[in-house]
Image 1 (cartoon, rainbow, N blue to C red):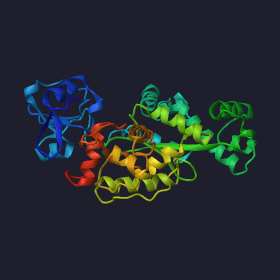
Image 2: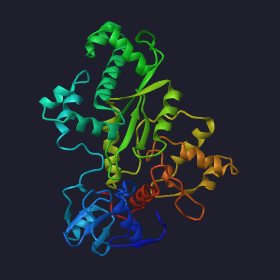
Image 3: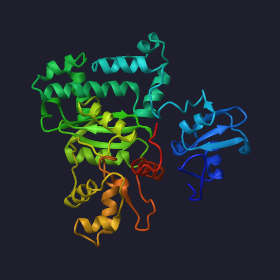
Image 4: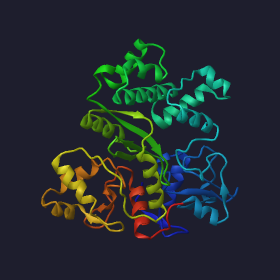
Length: 362
């Protein structure tokens, strides 16, 4: 993204028009949340990644968000639906998602999907895009998670297998070992990191939790997300599996209040395995008050290692719990925004929300 910026209709700055038009033509999803494009000739506004036919550059007006575009008299594009939260479940899939969430043992084949009026290929593509796995793999992971939980609560392997929807012990044992890396009877030393998507105004996030607390919160398009998950699994001797946690509703509620400008602190238990140095850096991050910023050198001084500025920056980048451990509040010594795994545009928006220089994200 070019650094030249323009301000249009709002205190939030925008990239220059040439950059935004190029993103619109290329359907660049990395600009989601940065701007929406309003087409003067049709009166509609679109996401940067909209697949609709592209207008001439002189017919495009740019806004920082959908709310501002609506206030200026434009209406939502029916193709890309910019008013719908990024990553939200489409209407055609919602009944299936609800059915799956109500029964962790459910088994559905292609014929079952067709009976529900769904195209199996379309369902598979959606799950592959949003969860990085096929629909059948997603169901299998949920069943394994359910069985693992039952074994941890002293159920026999046989009971856990059949109560989780498996038809044979051999099939269960093979699937369990493939997922967890060990046989069901030898899994007592392991734990599960339950993962699920949480929608936010800045895009979907992947949340992870153990029985003790939140251990992961990252935007799903972060480039290092898979690496972070692998490291977390190694640290905790755990496997990340889709499922539900008692912490997720609390996390969603607190994030909603935060984005609405009504919350400045979080009170969820956090699980942060790492080196002693990383622990110091992450603890220092949590002392930066909402609406405030601190430089990397100031962070290094606070932890008593003033010459470890680069190491502090690396530890910031290794933070796996975005927003709650506010690494976005650390900036360059000259006040510039640098280094954020979720993208500099998100870092900027988070600081704008906290500092009250822009309206809360709607």
